[in-house]
Every structure is written in C-alpha cells, then in structure tokens.
Image 1 (cartoon, chains in turn orange, brown):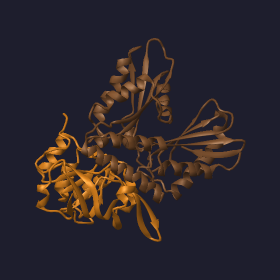
Image 2 (cartoon, chains in turn green, orange):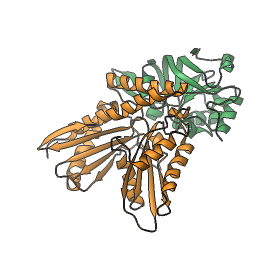
Image 3 (cartoon, rainbow over the protein chains, first blue to last red):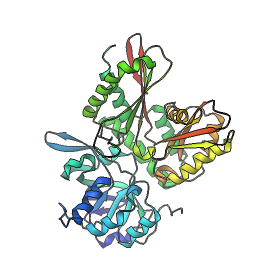
Image 4 (cartoon, chains in turn purple, yellow):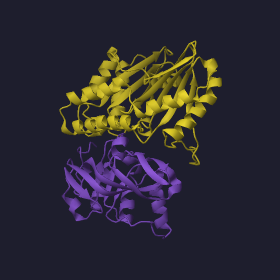
Length: 179
Length: 268
C-alpha cells in the first residue's frame, strides 16, 4: 500500500483509481456547513484561518470529547460525499486543496471536475468510525468551533487507511461509473 | 414506576458500541464467501472496527444516528417518556452521542428522538432502533398495484441500484408490506428490529437477487450488498398495495429493554 504525506503535490497524479493508499499528515474535516463557511469566508474576501493548499479535506463530522481542556476524537468515519457534489469543484479551486476523502462516491460530473483540477478523491469505509479514530494522533486545531461536529477539525493522522483511490487525476473512477 | 433513565442510557450505550451477534456473524460469513478483493478489504475494515469499538467502548460510527423508541404497553408510554428523555440526555453526555438533530427549517440544534407507543405487552417493553442519516436518505414508500409481488422486488432492487454505496452496504432491508401508507412505513422500521434468521420465501428471493447486483460493501463491488431482508405485513385495501422500504446500514444497531417482575433486562 502506497503511503502519501500531506501536504501533497504533483505526485498524486501517479495514483490510479482502484489502488489502495494510506495517508500520514493532517486531515481537515469539512462537510455541509464547513463547505458553506469556507465559501462564505472567501466570498467576503476574508482569509481562511488556515492555508489549505495541497491539503486533504475529509468529509466527516467527528464525534469528539473534551478531556481536561483537550479534544479527543472517539469516532470519525466518513460521511456521504455526493451530498456536496455541486460544491466540490468550487471549493477545491478556491482553497487549493488537492485531496478529498469520503464515502459512497461522487457523481460523474463532480468526478470530471475534481479530476480536471488535478485532485484525487479517496474512499474510506463508511461506518468505520472507531477504526478511523485509531489513526488520529491528536487534534491539532479546531476552526469555527461553534459549528460543533461540522467545525473544521485539523486531525493529525498516521497511516490512515486503507483508502481506495476512487477518482484519479485522469478522471478514471473505481468502480467504473455506472451511468 | 422504578427509575429507568440509567437502564435506558445503558441500552443506548449497548446499541451504539456493539452490534447484535447475528449481524456480526452475517458480516463474518459474508467475508468468508466474498471473492472480490475490494469487498474483502471493506469487510475486514468493518470487522476490525467492531472489535475496536467494543474494546474501547466508543460508538461504532461517529453518526450516532437518530434514536427511535417503541414502547409497550401504550399506556406506559406517557410515564416512560420523561425517563427516556433523561436517559438520552445522560447517554449524550456519557457515551457520548453526537448532537445530530436540527430544526428542519432554521438549522438550529435541537435534541429529538422518536417515541412510539404500541399496543400489546403487559409489563414494560422498550425496543430501540438507531439509524444514521446515510441510510435514512434511502427510505422509500411505493404504492403498487394490488398483488404485484414482482413490483415489490423491483422496488427494492431499483432503490438499491440507485443508492449504490451511499447507504453503507451491506444493508439490512426492512420492508413494510400492506396496511396503509403510514402503517407500511412503521412496519418497515419494526422489521429492522427483527433479528436476522431463516428467511421467508420473498425475503430470500429479494436477498439473492440483490446480491447479484454487484454493488458490494460500500458500493466498491462484490457479492455482499444485502445482509438480510426482513418483512412485516398487514392486510390492505383491495385497491392498493403500500410498500415501505427502510434500509439499515451495516452498523445495524438495536437494543431491547424488558421489565419482568420489576426487574430490568437489557439485550440485543
């Protein structure tokens, strides 16, 4: 299994749909309200609290607990990516993030757009929240904490996987899209 | 009435951190039968996740779902409602549960659970169904032509095909057949509380045909799309055939509470 390190660069163009990878670095969780917040911030010509260029966005609303002033992630599996299909491209283009991780796949149009931006979409097993949490070393930071599970959690992970390359930069999907 | 909120919180904790044995067995058996490499990998992740969750006593899935309580006898529902509310509050803090429920229009966070009084039973019985959002989006109601058995199978298969990996397959299919539209919906939920066991002919047919679709675990291919099919039925008007479909993700969570001679028992 190939290991990838964030932030990523052009090496992700070598990833092929259907192969397995693991990720070491930082995951930035982003789901419905996080997407909205990121886009609103940029529309208001404000700066994002963190530079997302080359980073991995994780479609996830983690279950966290505060222990003695520090956050611990208890369960953090992926959420359905296709709910945000009409926003992925805009978000990736405006933030410069290069990886998305989620579950359930994205639609053919979103797949074409994501690939066209030189980005890769990876899948992790849905429901495997405890397993996902076992790869989290610590919560580095939480942005927009008031959004709760939909805040942007920066999670330091080691060997997070197996992740399935589901859409690669050449626009190939796994499994091949049934349209 | 004895104090019940602690046992109720315990029941929620059990449902969130462990799967019923027959569901885990069905996943293990699916793993043995799979020939598809990606399906094996996905099932391995699921099984590993189950051991980790049980060992660490954390929720199997970060989507701790919406909780639906079915209470018998109906006459006790009113008195038990407060205890359930306290039990959910306690579980939300202790397990903990992710705050999942929002006002549908304003988006403001608001706690909510389903409470459904039912007929039957002498001493208190509570059934708990826990269901995440991913699978819930594929709940469907069909009004078919009377007697259209093939239509029932087609309704399930077309929904599964459209859903692909989104409801987190392999799923348990709960079908409510007959009654009225609302009765069919309730039956499809209660069907998900029925432990998997020897299938009825229609359950078997749907399962076999569904598992030939090739959707597989998480929609990444394979022969395991459905872990089991459970059907509950009721007589219906001669002019209609209501069919409600509830898909439950592979994290098929449930728990039961029974009071017998004043003693509480909790199990799955």
